Image 1 (tube, protein in one colour):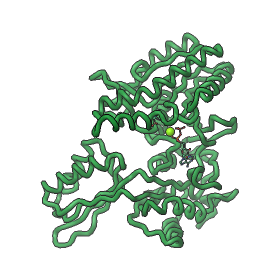
Image 2 (image 1 turned 180 degrees about the vertical axis):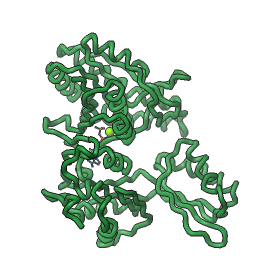
Image 3 (image 1 turned 120 degrees about the vertical axis):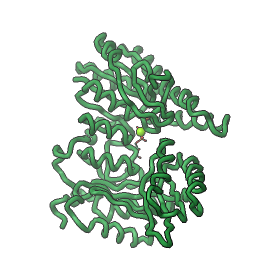
Image 4 (image 1 turned 135 degrees about the horizontal axis):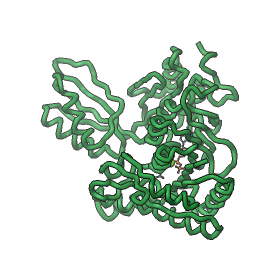
Amino acid sequence: MLIVQKYGGTSVGTLERIKNVAAKVKARSQEGHQMVVVLSAMSGVTDGLIKLAKEISRKPDPREMDVLMATGEQQSVALFCMAAKDIGLPAGSLLGFQAAILTDRMFGKARITDVETARIQEYLRRGKVVVVAGFQGLDWDSGDVTTLGRGGSDTTAVALAAALKADVCEIYTDVEGVFTADPNLVPNARKLEAVSYEEMLEMASLGAKVLDIRSVEFATKFGVKIHVRSTFSDREGTMVVPEDQITERLMISGVAHNKNEARLTIKGVPDTPGIASKIFTPISAAGIVVDVIIQNTSAEGKTDLTFTVPKTDYDQAKRILKRTAKEIGAAEVLGDTRIAKVSVIGIGMRNHAGVATKMFAALASENINIKTINTSEIKISCVIDERYTELAVRVLHEAFGLGQEKPPVAEDVV
Ligand code: ADP
Ligand code: ASP
Ligand code: MG
């Protein structure tokens, strides 16, 4: 088999842990598999680098920021290969540019556009375990180093698995798989045996950081089978697979939360054709992803628009929005960074009414006010005050019976 494995920051968080991972990889490769191992930076390292940059500059240059951030993964792969050689495992490291992971030029959130696997294949032919630095790539046109956004090593791994047509992409992390809610927040959260691409995509985009959203996009597009499992136990984890391979169709598969968004409102917008495009074009041109857009009914030819953006993009989005407000003659721009989004997700809700009502009732039972609501075929999200996030997640997990041994399946619920 050709196996791509990825180990996250906690899994390689100390030298001892790096040695432990090297031993795991050795054991697996001795079963006769070809292996490509993607590593994250040791836990805390990326945060530390960002802190350093902010200390030296109020607004660090994005190109140099990526040069700096890429050093975290560079350390891990080098240390890993040293440990591997000491235990007799032939391993060779490749940085993003050496592995030819090509991206666009959006520093800090670059998208993988292509992977040229020739060098990796060559290493594999020579019987080596190929150890690729996660999270980093190369903008071919300029030759510049790029990074893929927080959590991006998952995407490196899945993109490599797709390009190499690997049999499986194993994501090793600090929990045993994908759970019905963040197990660090909800003690009775249950591990899912399998979850569909579509649900995982929603979960990831709604805050379940166990997989980076772009990694799930890649997996969906190229049919990569993902196995999310723990570095610290041998138990089976969660398979992320096409929907037709799911046997247990739960009504709701999970509750997700996200505290990393902020809300912007532009008030008194002239309600004329083309206005939404004028507002959102400059924001998306800056690479900022907008979510949950709400436009109020207009009164006297004026309307208000509210939307959310990632907190990391909040200042920039607000600046852009203020500029646009001036241009189009809007009244004012307001912002709120103390919000959170809680969501319930499940393919089972496609054919069932009543999920929304249950969700609203559960939140109301704890007096949690809903600021905005957003739905799709397989999810319902509510924006609430950030203070109530944990409470909301627990109450929703309980209300949908997710902690139970046998949570409601889609067929049971009317
Ligand atoms: P890594 O460093 O291995 O990439 P991450 O911290 O990025 O690990 O992701 C794993 C974390 O995701 C877990 O420790 C857990 O707190 C969080 N998480 C959030 N939602 C879920 C979920 N539904 N199932 C599993 N883990 C979740
Ligand atoms: N080291 C990067 C981060 O902390 C990428 C990753 O771990 O996936 O976000
Ligand atoms: Mg991660």
